[in-house]
Image: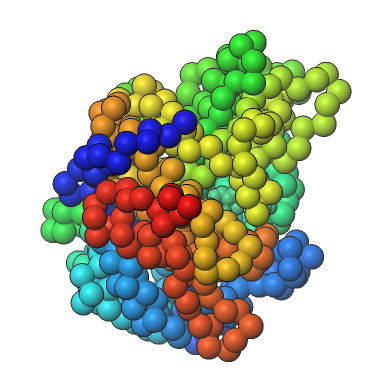
Length: 484
Ligand code: GBH
């Protein structure tokens, strides 16, 4: 249960920063404006509309391609310290390669960055949030090792355009979504179902791509601009269902959290040893001559190791882990289970459900996740780079207010009781937007967007006012519903 006292322990440390996040494909629209190239999400929604809950797409979305000034205005109404947004690769590099930089694409983000800075809001850029150029997908996308160079060339272009004004960078958003949820379900762009090999090849390539981009920033841009850069991981907090599930749960954590963290954040680098061993056994059992988890060379281990300035953590939800029954079908991981680990994921009866089928509320999970990360990787600096709740509709969003209150109290406990170095928090999301396979039905916004109006009118929710109060008071204030 939550602590009831509303004392000074509900105050954030000095310098703690609050922001909100978005992603290009979810808000921009303008999918073929000017010379923009086609991305894998453009392709998926146009060729497979049945994969999207309401058969919608991001062709117009919030129309932020035209309404970016209004976005800056609402960010400033809330009083955000920073706004995290992503760059559409195909808007900057229409072919996916760096042979041609789009003037219009370049100017779009220049205006956004300058407009934010004028209002005193720091721009935080995610270089990649899932909208791969289709042309690169046609060459294999994230399972072609050449993507390491394609991505780092793109990253260098982006640094060269914006690093003079942008001081916080995320290379790649949520490798587990790019490599696991996509290839394990076939419902996420590039809509390819291949759960045996691709997730592991992809994981290696994503980590190398991140590392190369980090080193480009470190060597070519940091000396001049002194910013910070890392990758952002999506972390579900896993707990054992019973005592007998403890070891399996630890392996699940190593697979879905450690696979994308150990190579970067651990002292020794490389894959988590327990996972590497398990995947060798699984691969042998399946009849492969070598592990489906491709090993890193010594050089690659050293290339990836230490490529961070802080730990960026996107966190929403938790799962209970148990061993699968011998003939049990294991659903699409990482949301329902991990087939190669013979693990099944469940919900604790005390966690309430949300309008997103994958999302159960467990505020304690965020604190426990932070504690596990520190135990594994030491006393590193954390930013919560995404956290927020989905609802169906309405401006009086009491559940969202209570969600932010309860999760932020846990963040404060992590800071004050556990001594964790959490230095920033990011609400997902600034305004309702295209929620991937859920289309426009599940709404995460601090602002509501009217998607039936050509004006895409943004209206303030009660949660936006509460978040503003959090920022203004630098604490977790009473929610307007606490005395009801
Ligand atoms: C984050 O991913 C993303 O970074 C962000 O873009 C996204 O909008 C936000 O969370 C909320 O989902 O129901 O089949 O559509 C967190 C992981 C990604 C998990 C999307 C659920 C969709 C499953 N989520 N995924 S489905």
